Image (cartoon, helix red, strand yellow):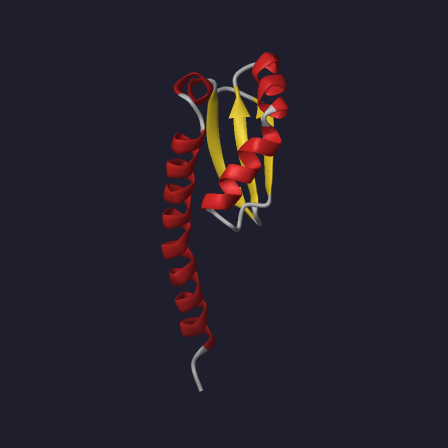
Length: 93
């Protein structure tokens, strides 16, 4: 029987390996989906439980990104099936 400490280390190790890869894939997909202008007004925070969190630099860009939210979500989901939601919020980039 395996030691619980070894099991936990093994699981955390596998999760840590997947996280950077998933973040890299998300960033690559984001770059492919959005044009330069939109990317300069946004910053990816990350993905958790299928929800992609994104900062935008102003309320005007929050409105703009929310208008395009369904299209962005569909394109992200095509590239990364685990993506099920996109959330935008105003913050400092």
